Image 1 (cartoon, rainbow, N blue to C red):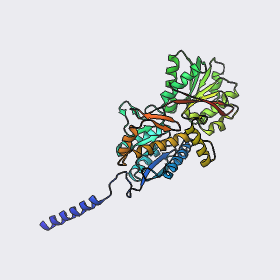
Image 2: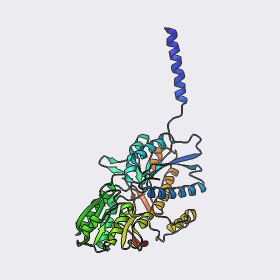
Image 3: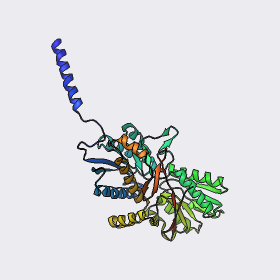
Image 4: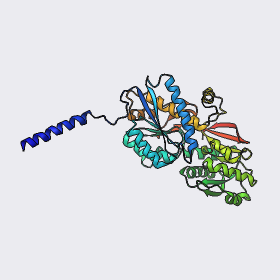
Amino acid sequence: MKKILLTAMSLFLVLSLFAACAPKADTKDADGATIKIGINMELSGDVASYGESTVNGIEMAIDEVNKAGGINGKTVEIVKYDNKSDAAEATTLATKLMTEDKVVAILGPATSGAFKAEIPVANDNKVPVISGSATADDVTVDASGVKEYAFRICYNDSYQGTAMANFALNEKAAKSVVIIKDSSSDYGKGLAESFTATYTANGGTIVTEEAYVKGDTDFNAILTKIKDMEFDAIFIPGYYNEAGLIIKQARALGISVPILGADGFDSPSLLELAGAEALSDVYFSNHYSSLDEDPIVVDFIAAFNEKYGQDPDAFNALGYDLAKFACDAIGRTSDVTGEAVKDALASTTDFTGVTGSFSVDENHNPVKSIVVIEMQNGEAVSSVKAGL
């Protein structure tokens, strides 16, 4: 019996030594020469346009950081995955990035639903996740409080909806509006709600609110219904996929009033879907304008054009700022761990980016201005920065 007991104790000690020597699941590279940042982005699927544009901006920024010597002498390594515009896939990839790839932060996803899906994984693994374009109000804070490991560098839907309601009233003198919203997304519903609250509180009238769902292509029933109504503008809280077709079909029916939208309009596909002729008297809130004459913006546009052979859109700019924002925070940590990076992100003040300068507030949101872009004949012809 004693022999068996001694054998068992010896085996236990050996296993304990192996366990003590086994690598721990932390977020540092074994050699300490590189810093890994994850990308969890929509590179295929319904909103691939957003993900692809964002990644182009991210990769350009990381190239610049590495060419300038990296972060405190360490090279930044990107680990990139395609979540296929699917929230469940985004969650799976977040787990892989944190537990297997050992990243210290994840950039993306681009959309609110997919981004929110990975936040529980971030909390469990103490690795911050940051989005450049997840605008839903409850992305970083909800009824239970601030989401400790979730950050964004874009303003939220309430801010956009309120800004566009004020724009409709004050800049377009629109006293009555029709809303045609995407009822299948939190994005569309949130924008419609905040627009309506501000617009009606300031004397505006919502003539009717119509709804569609993602994937719809024929909007003639809605447009025929509203055609003979009296209204001064149309507000479309939704993404470019459907908005482009709504605009095209509305103009074909002779509806010529101003059409307002939000950052979901920002995609080259909007022009392809609507056609240049239909895209006149169209206005949408955005995070950035290529018409901005700020030297930072001018230099960014020139560098992006040299690298990719085309002018950058807002998601390119947000991706660029997203990467620079993450690198700035990492550079301010003495011990590069997910928790340390989270603390640095939360304490960011006066960060200067292409999409504006901002500080991070107590809800992990940026305090920044908004841009409203005017389109005529398919081209952006003016932009105005505004607050609320």
